[in-house]
Image (cartoon, rainbow, N blue to C red; front, side, top):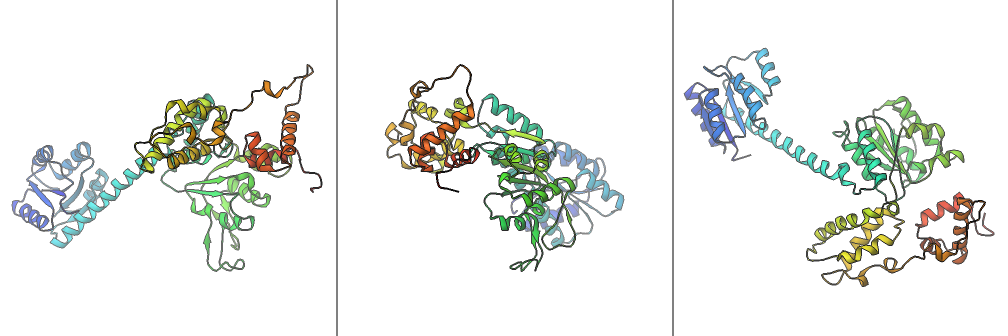
Length: 458
């Protein structure tokens, strides 16, 4: 904090000079003023970081100066020093925005301590503001790129949802940006100053998930050597993001339902429940309504989660957004990987538009990163593109599909396509998924949906 500018305001000249000298000896730039009006004149000519002002002065008092500084120079810290301190004046000064209130006489050590603490507090406040601005830029709704009607409709509803405390359910295929949307909802809500705790329900073994979510007490089970806070308790006053909530076991679904309804949790081994205040944001790539019908997801929990449903459309349904996404990712990876001279000709963009992107935005981002890393020259060429961006898919006419006049079942057609693709590749799921231009996870989901198994499999 050495080198910061401090203005000393006091009608006693000797005290002004002594205080100025003490501050200069401590390494600060110090100026003086005899009253509030002179102080404002100094401030108009020279920016300052901190003001030390007496209260009782002829003309403009220290309290009046404090009011003017808060109005005209809100970034300046004000410390009030007086020989006539009362509780009432201290309370008034603090209400008006004074950082501290101290009684004369003030020793050199006490003065240095007060000034250094005030400046450090201000520095930390500015740092928080800077971080908050960075978070706002990173997690604003405008950072979810796209102009398609379906996406803009979702973002509009998400912005409205952020202003409430209602539970949100984000639906969308893998890679569509569900976590990014969840963060945008949290960081644009009234809970933004509190934590957003993320837990992927599908990435943690079922036997550990309860402890991760709810916590446990020491000795509650083998290996519980200390008390442990769960993710839910860590999110108190903030938001809990349950990613892939469709993977949650039924027994834990009951406990999440209780959390939403009662605002309390039961730690493993704890005799009494713990009250918590969390906002639930859940996400899934699965069809929860279908899971409710087949008994793998609780109906009451589904309706509790889907108070505000938000659906992120897959990238194949918003092809007009692909060129903009490619451009954004290309700029990002050029900078990150230090390839400022690399170019991506506009003539290559149609290759990106023809692919169905089963991995959605995440897959597109990975492909662009790969191109930036591996491109041998200063311009990406057709030869640098991955094989699947070269390949042209057959048109619908090339499949020779005849539509019967009496109508046709869409599900039956989808089932037949999946069966034939699996048979074509001897039930190799990876090759069948690639042939159908979908991810292996999506193929497995459709196999489960249609109860498809190879002959002889249970």
